[in-house]
Length: 300
Image (cartoon, rainbow, N blue to C red; front, side, top):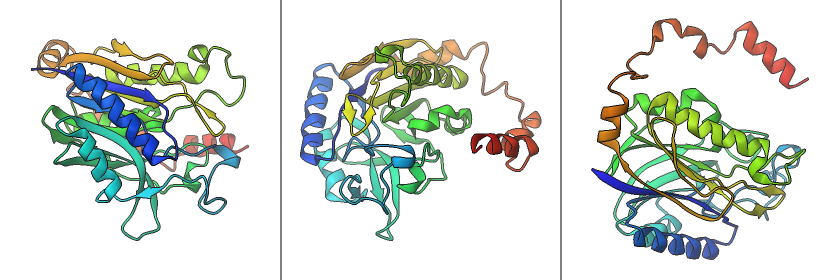
C-alpha cells in the first residue's frame, strides 16, 4: 500500500493562535497533495526555549519565556485534533504531568478521533534538564498508516534510541526537532553549517542503521537566540533522501510503500536479524572507566 507522507519545516512561537493558524495552513497544503501522515516539529505548540546552555530558559530563572505547559487531554491538543481530522499528525509540545508541576519535552501522535501514542524526550542537550524532566521509554505504536515510533531532536544522536524503536516494530520513525545552527563559527550559508551537516547525517544514518522510513521535521527561522536549520526530510530504509525542504519553510512530501520497500531492502542484508546482542555488553555499561573518563574530559 502506497501512502503519501510529509515532514514540516516551519517557525512556531509562544503565540498559540499563530501555531494553530500555521498548523491549519500546512495541513490544507498536505491534504491537497493527498498526504496521510504529517510530522510537525518539536515544540510546534508554544515554541521551544529561547536559548540553551548556561543562559538557557529555566523554570527557576524565567516565567515569561517558558513554553506553555499543556496536558495531553487538554483543550490545546483537542484543538489540534479538530484541525487534523482524518490526517494523522505528530506534533511536539511541553507536556504538564499529572502532578501539575513536572514538565516534559513531549510529542503526541493523533488524528481527529484518536491519540495513538505519546513520547517524552529522553536525551537532553546543553542544560535542557534545567527546563524539562527526562523521559525514560521508547515504544512504537500502531496507526492506520503503519507502526510508528517517535523521538525528539538530540535523541537522533544516539543509535540506541532508534534501534529500540525498530526492535519494537517501528516501520516509520518520526524525529521531531528544534535543531539550531552552531552557536559559534556559524556558517554564513546555514546549509553549509556544521550542525546542519550533523542533523542531515544523523537522519540518513538512523534510517539506514535500522532499515526504516525516517521522517525528520524541524523548526525554521529564528526564535530568541536560536537560528534553526530547517531541512525537514523523508528518508527511505536505504538511507536515500526522498524529499527535503532544505532551509526553507514548507513540506517535504514523499510517497512510500512500507511493505514493498521492506520486502526488497530487507530480503538480503537485514540489520535487525543479523545483530549480535551477545557481544554488545559494553554498550549498556554506565560505570566503566572509559565512560567516566569521557565525562571528566567533557566537564574539564
